Amino acid sequence: HAVEQDIILRKEENKAINLDALSKLPAGVTITSTPAGATVLDYQGRQLGVTPLELSNLRPDTYTFRVELSGFVSETIKVRALEGQRFSANVELKKYTGGISLQTQPPGASVYVDGELVGTTTESPAYGISNMLSVDSINPGRHRLTVQKTGFVDVNRTFAVQVGRMQNLGSITLREIWLPTHRLTLKSGRVYEGRLVRKGPEGNVDFEREGGVSSTYEAREVESIMPLTPE
Image 1 (cartoon, helix red, strand yellow):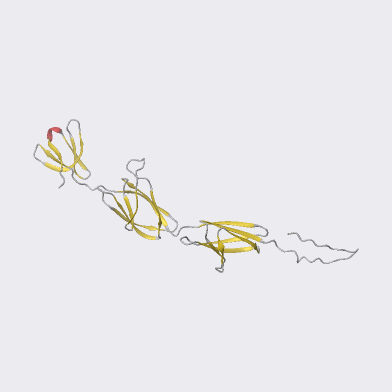
Image 2 (cartoon, one colour):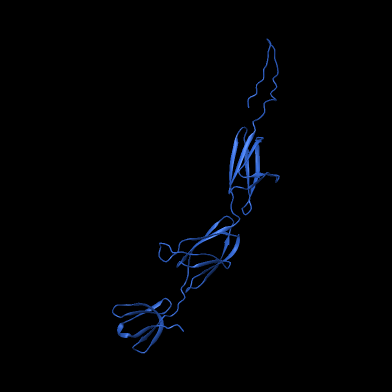
């Protein structure tokens, strides 16, 4: 800032000028955080206030601040406060948790973390696969994931959560529980229990006698095919 001083000089006179009155302009620092309401401490641990926080009349220097908020990872920042200037710093606080995202094939599966239901996958425009399901606010460490759907084998796996990170577990495929639904009787006298895959207009039958393995029987071979009656 400007300082005025009147000086009277006589001819051929020398006079010393006192410049002690000249001082450095104070500096300012504005600290904000996302989310707001975090406590700001100095390097000695003294509380200065909560964000958004404006600090004024600071001596130009480099300052260390610690920003803390319950449920979030604390952050330490260094700020260089310059003479006559105001420095602004925004601190992005990360939750002291992490999360996961996943899809299932097929959709409509229930997702559990450590035995607690956290969501159900929903149908997507893509056939046979669900929309992405995201689960946040999971504490750091190892956890157990269980994916269930009626008529399918449960999927169990473990995963690790890191603070502030969302881990993509990818697409989880559930294997259908294979149960016979029909009884096929052939004219040869053989009888099979399995699944009717398709019956053609001419009477030919595609029949699955075990999971994933099907055979075709011509109409002239088939005596009858009947749904199994639940016991």
